[in-house]
Image (cartoon, rainbow, N blue to C red; front, side, top):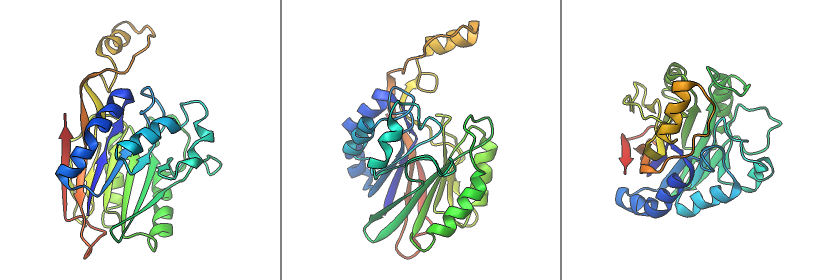
Amino acid sequence: MKILVLGDVVGRPGRNFLTQRLREVRSELSVDLVIANGENAAGGAGITAKTAEELQSAGVDAITLGDHVWDQRNFENEIDELPYVCRPANLPDSNPGRDHLLVEFGGFRVGILTVLGRSFMGPKVACPFATVTRMIDELKTKTDCLIVEIHAEATSEKEAMGWYLDGKATLVFGTHTHVPTADGRILKKGTAYQSDLGMTGPRESVLGREIDACLGRLLDGMPRKCPVADGDVGLQGCLVEISKEKPLFPKSYERVEIR
């Protein structure tokens, strides 16, 4: 089984690219399951039911979210109706939405969950390490392999999570910073890891936003809108392959970038 995991989908350019290319990519790479972070899918901040359905129609099987989960008005009233979407597991229990996903394909039971980091991040959340420990205990008899995302600012926090879950998860990957890291590998105890997958969106940008607007804010400090850019659009992520003999640990890992 091959699982393709995509970095943050940024705005309409990211969504359009997946609509136009993802099914072709799935066929070319023999992908069985696609997971994507969708927290920037609607206008570059947040997600709506409509944009989530657009991603699913494009070929995304499971959508994870991050710190912008509630940025779009009324999404808190829509998320429960989207069985292929999960919000971060370490948000307060009072938050709506699923704290994990279970996806079955070809006899495999895949568990998917996201936690938010706490370093330099806005939302007040429970400890991501304690949350992951609890979730693994809950899911270990219900899943054959486990995909864990840490949506965080600090590379140190992401890397620490990778080592913490080495031997306990199939893949640990980071999102949020929109710039792919070069540290993807399979760790000592068998878990695949990458600190940040990057983004599915416009690379000719500053983290997906128009260059001139972002530069202006940095140069003069004046507030201004930074619209989503539209140049050099593509996807970034990783591909892992698992086998029925040892489904918890991937046979292979590789970084993926298609423009």
